[in-house]
Image 1: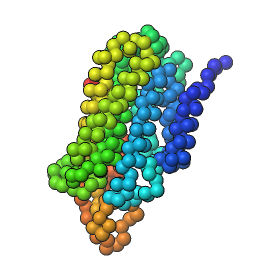
Image 2 (image 1 turned 135 degrees about the horizontal axis):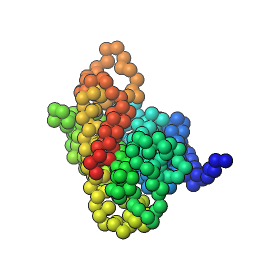
Image 3 (image 1 turned 90 degrees about the horizontal axis):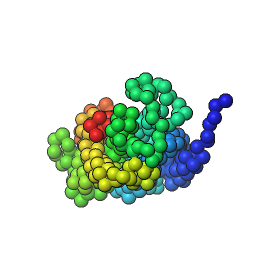
Image 4 (image 1 turned 180 degrees about the horizontal axis):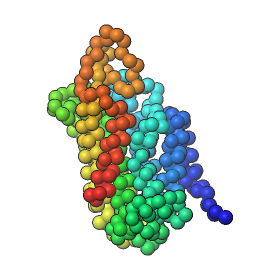
Length: 316
């Protein structure tokens, strides 16, 4: 008979986050359902670090959105000023969690006894699974499962550092007093333009990546005795790679936004049109600021976070 321990604590945390998102209108009903599935999947691992990083990303990102929402509502069309924390759908939630969720499930399949997909993961990665014991080995150890434990954790860090960097650059960069410049032409463009850079936004993206690195370091140091033995080195390692992923991930996001995501500006309302804007009326005074109409904002977030996550997992 199959023995199964219900993950009560992860269930309660995932439920609390989803309900809180619904109550504060930072999540739509579909977004809350997606957040619950993502949360319980990542928090149910014997290693709690991925789930803790997810929680930190959600809380910090929501706070940044609340801070920047009034300014964005004034500069960008399609924002409801009453939704101070944003209103994220399931597509937005999965765009900001896909690669981290996949890496977490792969880590669980290799290191959590009884986790679904263990044989598939062993065949895919070409290694035998190693049960996780918190005082026996550090998950960032290069020797554990031929380095796959370390690589998968860096995929998770790369993902959340990129997404947090982009979130802070978008939500706080728009508060900059100086007009942003377009990455591809260096010309000054209206605030809110996809692919635009500002000193405040760039600093925020690097800081956001470092915040995710610090969160991963703190979680590992608390829950894993082997990691605590090398806590100083791990702090520098995770802060450094977090900063790189936050800065370069946001830069990649900006490059995609400037080239493959169309930005339109209304000369009448003096606001940027977004993915949620109503179609312009015929004859409306609209100009194209940049980009081809190929990718949506969710597409850009998904591609940039996946590429950054895979790059960090490979190089770190």
